Image (tube, rainbow, N blue to C red):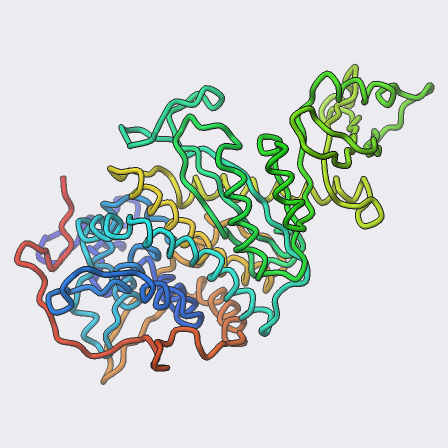
Amino acid sequence: MGERHGWLFEPTFNRSIKIRQADPRITSDAGALLLREVDHRLGLTADLAAELFDPRDPVRIRYTQTELLRQHLYGLALGYAHQDDADMLAHDVGMKLAVWDRPGKQVLKERLASQPSDWRLVNRLSSKPQRRAINEALPAWVGRHQLAAGHGRKVVRGTLDIDPFPIELHGSQQGGAWHGHYNRKMYYPIVASFSAEGDYDGSRLGEGFVHAVLRRGNCGGAEGAVRFVKESIRKARPLATHLDSRIDAGLVEGPVLDTFDDDGVNFVGRIKNNARLDKLAEPYLGRLPGRPTKDGDEFAIELGQYRAASWTRSYRLVLVIVDLPDPKTGLRQLFPHYFFLVTNWQAERRSAWGLVEHYRKRGTFEDRLGEFNSVIGSGLPAETFEANETSLLLKLLAFNLAGMIRGELEDASGNGWDLRRVQQTVLKAGARVAEHSQRIFVDVAKAAGVLWGRLLERVQRWWHDEAWGRDAAGRIRGPRRRAWVPPPSHAHLCLVLRE
């Protein structure tokens, strides 16, 4: 075969095929350029970096805060969840073209930051003011995409979904603890997500996480929920003319419900069964005489006002009865399944069954949490609790950024796209980079190019605010010529894989 040709091997099933090592101008992550285009049009990372303090000496730094943020966020959006992946992405030509803030062809000869630089970035952003700025960027990014896709208009009705979820841990992270319900060692963060009309499968533009707080692994579901709800409402209110919320049973406590009610936000939540509620449901659980219907029955019943012993005021209570046959056997259970919803919606504004349909739409939000854990947010490996909260917030920002592309694709095609499919078919696209004269040509794989074309047609029609991506003097925050700082002597200029 001959090592002088640079071949890796010659397949025995077809000796006309020769496998060679990839040219350094070939990338499998060309979608980083799509992420940069969306990012640049909305001025996301540039404006966030301007809000963050950078204590480093500007004369000696090689990578600006903006470039480091881009590399971190784009890598997460592409599915690179491990810190060591930064060493490989530092030499990827697609990432280099997307991340560098330098004009011209010099970006092809540069390298990006290594894993230690990325690690120092996360620790540098772990102070309380820095974390607050990143947290404030969550609703700001959702709002910018909403305005851009909506031609400068926010949505009329928006829904805030709030829920805690587990992030499993495998080390000795500060604040990690064993949780008896989930039967694992974990963190137990609480997050809030915004969606237009409360439907993640309807109008998909301008949705995403707007607030998050990392909590220790053994905390209660509603611990700190009152303050969290107030902050979530403050952040989400500018995104919609009318705002409502949906919560799970773990957050249905008197002070939490009163917070929504006092702020004028309609809510609906599932309430845990108890002896008193079961007694209220008893008269409605009997089946009518005669042969039951083939398709089963589902209905909602108004039970009037209800006040638990620990509540300060009463709220409307709805009984939901689900009496459906088993999809495999066609037989019904001995007793119908039932649950309760509690709300401050007036009956004339939203009927009992309307509440059920509205609440069921939060199932997609729960799918989003599972998607976040499996595609972007697996694990928080930093040493300190504050650094892990910073990592969580950055992962949520990356999820929102990738979600903008997902939303545009869904609206363009009319079909649903899960985030892993977006990564595999759109973002992780193969491309070859070539130089000609003073230009850089990126030849994208044709299969991905079709989807890119449909996506970019929509992006190019976005509404734009002139203040996005500009500094106080009105100058665009973009590529500028600056003094070249050589990489440190220990840095590898080509990819080196560690054993």
